[in-house]
Image 1: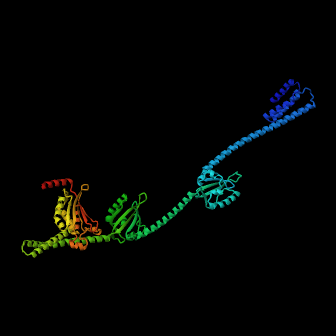
Image 2 (image 1 turned 90 degrees about the vertical axis):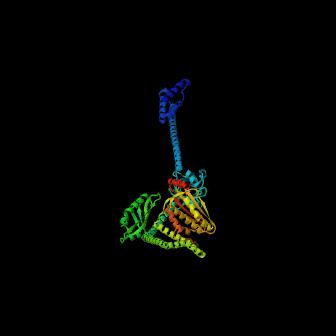
Image 3 (image 1 turned 135 degrees about the vertical axis):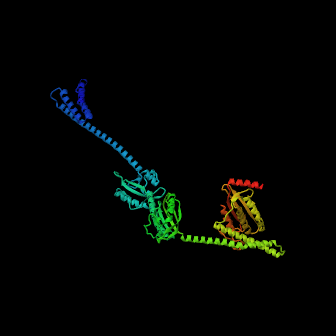
Length: 626
């Protein structure tokens, strides 16, 4: 309305200026602007208003000439046509603007969707490969790059068959053509072993899923590739583990059967208990001996122990269960006939990989015959010792008159050289026999525990020096040179001086007897203050000894080879007597030799006297010597 009124007023204001009727077309601007601004209705309304104004105000005569009517009709037609055209253009521009906005929105959504798709592909744990209808790669993700060893730029545009082993490429090309004719979501080759080929030529097993890309007119296919090398390795490891487990189970069953067979056939009674001491298993020998049946002995086997020993044995066994230390004891067990036999019983703990005790395995060894044989042997040995003691006494009784007769002959001067020689022979042999009888008596007393030592504080150095000097002549007579070491200071011990001298004398006699020509005998005293011990050793360069002789050297009547021992005389009692005397003094003796012909060494170890008493004895000895 305002536009129409404005243009009508403009036309009226131009009349004086133009001095003529202004053109009617000037009023077309009103419907054109109205249609542009408000559409066809506003343009038609503006056309009608302008036409009415022309009829009412512009045309003065009441009758309108035909020309004016035609002009007015043309105006109205042009106004309506212009309004329609402008309104249509306006609507078209609006629709175009809306479509443009919709297109921009669609492009943004498509970009977001594409970004999300790419992010999804990149985040996928599988290798994602988009392949076109011609079999060339269009898109890949990082996992596909990692799997095949190619870069993204190298893979895009590459034929998909390049990622397959050479022997699978032809078949894959044929299957790909078939798939493009009937695309579907499915795994690739579910019945076949599929493999991929890396850039370095290595082959690896894969699983592939095929998915046609929706909305794609170019036949794009998304292939998801999963490297199953680890799964195959895990599967192979699982199968190997199952095989090993089965083999271990078979071996366990075989070992269990073997253990049962061995346990049932050993001579011992065998059993197992849990860590609390309750019985779990017994072997066949146990059931045969005790007369019980499987199941009857479960819980505890102590009822077979002799009542006189049950409390002691049970208490000791409980201590070992608590400490976990191996157990050993000797006691009688009742058999199926009610009789008792002695058994040496042992048990040791079975532990798991963490060191925890899970059960105990024990055995009972029948030692009744052994004990009886040992007792018989001891009885025989006792009778032997008694016989030796009686023999020595019986031999000593007639020897006394013979020795007296020799002494009388010594005092009788006959002047006959033959009688003198016979007297000397008799004297030597009587003395030798007397020493043998004394040794027999000493060995017998030691064996029976009846040898008494006259213990006093004495200087081992002085005893050693005196004894060595006593035997020096006999050693030099056999070609041996004696050397004394460590005899420059007193060494105090608590012992029997006569027996100490006897021990050293036996060793020196042994060194002189078993020599092989000129040699050296070294007598050495060595003190170990830290251990409160003194060591007296005698080393020679004689015939030496082998290992077999060293093992039985200190047994009574033990000698070297018969040819050598018999030529040198003796009963083989000296070293046995020396060991017995050393043990009675709280010491020990050991023998060493590097072999036959390489000499021997005997070492006697004795405890030192207490420090205070030894110093007092030393002062007293020093005062006496002064």
